[in-house]
Image (cartoon, rainbow, N blue to C red; front, side, top):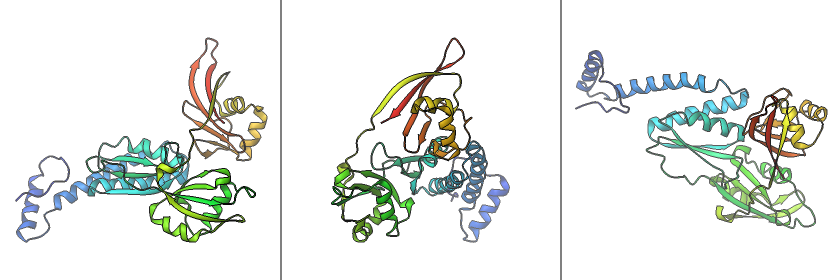
Length: 306
């Protein structure tokens, strides 16, 4: 009888083989070698984790990513499929980048609809995670919002007021007079239906709906180009939002500017293609294609979300 091997590996040393035979002779667990391999795998993953997280600066993102990496390793080792709660956009982005470099781990992000910002991750071994798990549900919140419009903050505050943790919630899609649609973990659908009866001063009713019934619209964008001497956030964002650089610097000082959903406090951050800049009260801006000009400047495509 041969000990079960969980991972491709060289044949154990003579000492290890002898130990396994003695364990088996006494009717003890024959998973010793598998356990040893698992320990080596964890040690290698831990070393890789340090390298993978090296470029991440946000401490809250780092801590969350450590938990996700640990969950992914456990899922791969045990051939299970595990799921996170809803993640913030920066955590989701960095986690997908790191997990995408690991050959024995597959990750699938789901937020309920294509443009979702807050998503859940499913992680597991590629041979196990073969389909998209059913881990996101939707609820419609309706009421007489024609005379008393409610904001995103009103809906969020009302939901959190029922005792639901924010990481159990995905996006909130505002529908004006029709109310809103909320993404959340399936286990809390019945709870929110029975618990949420008011948003602001408006009495509401909640109804579970299929994800196909979500009334989201692809974001409207406007693209234009600018030529700048640098790729600093103050240069590109001031051009993109049509405000002075000094005004943008003030907004940064007031912590009203975010790059890739992370609040920034310095105006000398260099941007690259794909970065998203958000300014409170002004919307979002995505950095498109960047080319160098003959005069040593940068021709940058800016994509403004309407």
